[in-house]
Length: 304
Image (cartoon, rainbow, N blue to C red; front, side):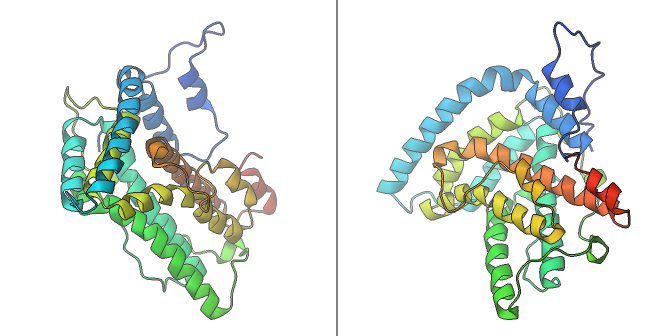
């Protein structure tokens, strides 16, 4: 896999502190250190500094135009295959290595989190369609749409299961929780393209890709994809209830799924979605590492 680590930190100057250094050294969240380094390197890039302010308003204007187009021609140009082909081409051609790393990682951790909940809340009996891409080409297999479908379907199947069994989600002793679906995978990624034109930061790429969802998806599919982002709160609530640790909800930013937000903000909320997922995955990993420890050690893992 392409190395996504940051370069050595500069000497600290109290009169001119580096904001990225502060966030890199901070330990108040559960995000993996390698992931944090990749994200902060992405945030400090010239692409994000100079391109994003131009891309974001144009992308949001494009979303408005696309939605008007879709209102007039609801079935024209709908092609999920074309959507994924364009996205994969862009990832190979323009997107920076650390951004591609974060994109592929997101599908993997999402599938592991849902698999973990399935195993512990339903005995692994719920139907599943795990997404475990190891290279950019794997993303082209309808991954972006399937990722959203997986979240909705999991919530529907889980709650139907709980109703049939007459159960609710209750806290389970740490020693009884099955952590087997949570496993490392970063070393299995292919080396990501790293040529001179692979410069595009993650947030700019997401803003550019978002209007494409409106072009190549039906209005229902685009609306569902946008509003799936607010289900971060729902999935995090299941995890919090399973562990009896409600404090994890404090690091969830996409909330209130029954009060849907505008699709114009989908690009920014997709960044929050990735951040929420990494925090939740890091929390589960921290609990996994604490399994078998005494209560004092367990209570200390979050730093609260």
